[in-house]
Image (tube, rainbow, N blue to C red; front, side, top):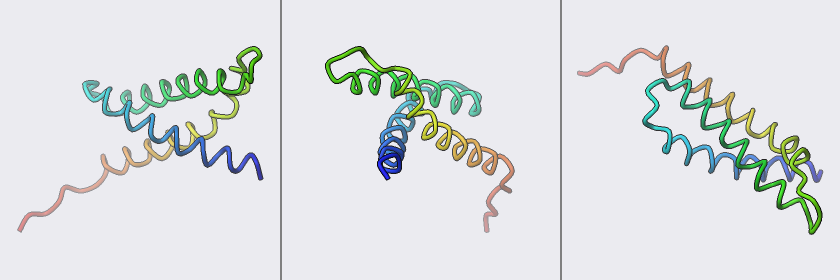
Length: 96
């Protein structure tokens, strides 16, 4: 049950970071690269912040943080790539 709570919390914070980075990387012309870069950077930021947060006065636990945030970031990346693929194959809207 605790892992489910961590997964939901990870999804929320990683979603917010990835949306911010998608706006920051808006200058990248290729949408697939923009999505990939934003999610890789999201994983890096979440690992860095989570590793220090899980230290509890000891050494940073970057490996544990990476393992914990990998699944939420991968799930969000899959959703974004599916949305991107659907937007490419969608027919243009008909104007009346």
